[in-house]
Image 1 (cartoon, helix red, strand yellow):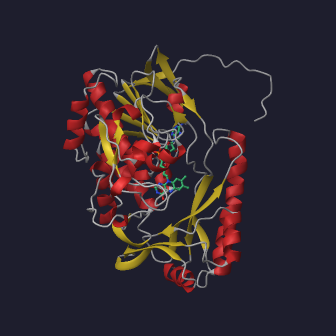
Image 2 (cartoon, rainbow, N blue to C red):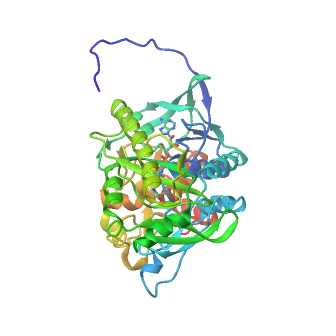
Length: 458
Ligand SMILES: Cc1cc2nc3c(=O)[nH]c(=O)nc-3n(C[C@H](O)[C@H](O)[C@H](O)COP(=O)(O)OP(=O)(O)OC[C@H]3O[C@@H](n4cnc5c(N)ncnc54)[C@H](O)[C@@H]3O)c2cc1C
């Protein structure tokens, strides 16, 4: 980023002050659940989201919600268990009522990776979660950017938010950073690193295509790697997840797909539609750099167009493919915030649980290469959500866990959602008791989470 050496000193200005109990920054995967959990505890809760709708990367990046279950199908004899419940499960149930998800359908092929496929309609997800937030009484500020933190000693006193209605100071007792970028924590002076160890990506929804034709194409090369059937456009038993085995697919297709970082996996809940086709791009620097992000956004748009051309060219029946939905660039991570505990790869793989678990989780994105011991679960400890050195700030989502391979598990959507429920609950309890995050008795948090149908193992 080229910056001139000239400076302009911005004059100080008086801001309107708003007072609440809990601020949740970022209304994405974790933030929606955090705000719901906080408001349902009776805390006056504000959610600050820069886009015009909630959802975050769950509606713009992925292919399916990984995972509400343990990896039982990869371990013969291991029991099938739903290990994430609570508010994340409630969202799936609400979506199911309007045809916005496959629900948790079993993978018929590729179940060494995930035993279930929980595909969603991205647009219905935005609506359903927005309605749930509204019903819970969350003060939802969309099109509003978190632009600063107000700190006194080791405490966050408030945040600065900016929208077309102006700039305001929002004071509260407890704060949860779910921005994905750790913006609030960084503004508040928390420690962080920027590993730049993943590609950025954008996913497009592709219309004018057929899952059946894609299946026939892959099958003609004996290259079906992942396969699941479920409800689609109101009819049961349809293909809802597919991916290809690159080793068996035509080398020209594979070469062109590799050039644009395109993944062959897709899911859907609608006929004639691939809900997610991902293209990836490795940026030279961390995605907190605005100007490099602009270049990456353009490059990803070019790659999206090429991805559609690829389907038109190679997959019979997809000649009319077009981009039906796109998003801005998605990160797999930018900042990692320093917390009281950093989950290790051995915690994940050994299936370790802690005396302050706030959820259990049983999915690893690198399975079967890396997987949780015996198809079991590990625990996310409360201390992994407490921002080091700050008395009243929690984080949830992709910003925790510095180890790349451990993060390949904790960053997944369902884990982020579970963390969100715990962080929102804890923030509300802290605000009610007027205590910092470290003074909150774990037993109180645990009892509340269990009452709210969070599954805990130990
Ligand atoms: C391309 C891609 C594919 C993936 N595929 C899968 C998959 O198939 N399955 C799976 O389980 N996981 C997948 N993941 C991982 C998973 O989707 C993410 O790790 C997870 O959704 C992150 O959740 P989060 O709550 O931390 O962040 P997000 O969901 O990104 O939420 C952050 C929110 O904060 C808002 N925000 C940011 N900064 C500010 C600010 N300053 N002010 C106001 N609002 C702000 C954002 O707009 C956003 O809504 C994928 C990720 C990517 C990038």
